[in-house]
Amino acid sequence: MSKLVISGYYGFGNAGDEAMLSAMVSALRALDPTLSITVISGNPADTCRRYPVASVHRLNLWGIAQALRQADLLVSGGGSLLQDVTSGRSIFYYLGVLQLACLLGCPIMLYAQGIGPIRSKLARSLMRHIGNRIVAGTVRDAGSLAELSGLGVATDKVSVTADPVLALPPVELTAGRDILDSLSMQGEGPLIGFAVREWQGQAHFKNIFAAVADRLVLERGARIVFLPMQCPDDLQASRLVAGRMNQPHAMLGYKADTEELLSIVGNLDLLVGVRLHALIFAAVMDVPFLGVSYDPKIDRFLETLAETPVGNLESLTAESLFARIEQSLTDQPARQRRRQRVDELRRQALSNAERAIDLVEKKG
Image (cartoon, rainbow, N blue to C red; front, top):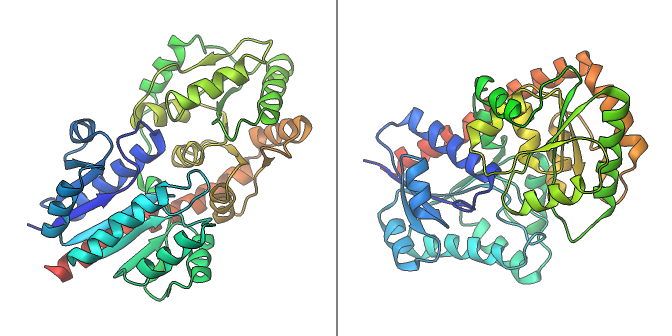
């Protein structure tokens, strides 16, 4: 039996990261049903309950070492693990896991990683050292490949694919419709979701979102719902936006699982998102969306679809956001173009698992 270890930001209730793990496990097991998978997690019990995997706590270095000694491959990813913008410390943890694998002779694959930005000189040096010791890698966008090259990592073993979540199949809409009905979201006006996050205490975008949401209710009869992707952080950010509104709105007030969130998003007429995986959920469910950038990963994802953000958290204006929402609600040609591009990205996302299984089989 082949054995594989997955390192990532799992077990912390982030809907995007949990969706990534779900997509990765599903794609890998579809190719090799007998594959033994161990996930390094912040909550091993929850990870084992959600997925058919073994799990070891991310701070259990002895347990991680034991798993790596027995593994045929360490998969690092997906997600934005190797960057030091959201945290200056977490990158050293993930690089430490990679270095431990190197010391124990366990081959490493970067799996649909979003690389950078990496600003610390020490982190850049370590990334260059470890990056040149991987056996193979995939990154989810061309910007990440350029980041690796700029760090001095040889990119001949690395290919551009797509985020693992794009490999998830669309889900049925019934569960999401029932949840929205429970939030009193029945009606005829466009159903518009907002997926926000906190970022460095910024208030400007919260005022803009609230003003635009109010205007949509008044002028379009819109039904507004806030969809937290990570609880409780996004729930608090959503409440701060909602607290600035004067018109009716609703909020998903609990930590929904991947299938529930996909189903809810599938019932929307449009999603406005700061969270990357909220946008990817909309892409999976063929729902129009607009991204507001706070990090290069938002811009890079939109670039893969030949699109641009509506603005960033500091430059966003109410007029530009409202105008783009109006346009997106009726632009069927743009929706068709996006659908075709997402289909191609789905095939690329599945190739991540194919690459990993090839490496495991070669090791075996």
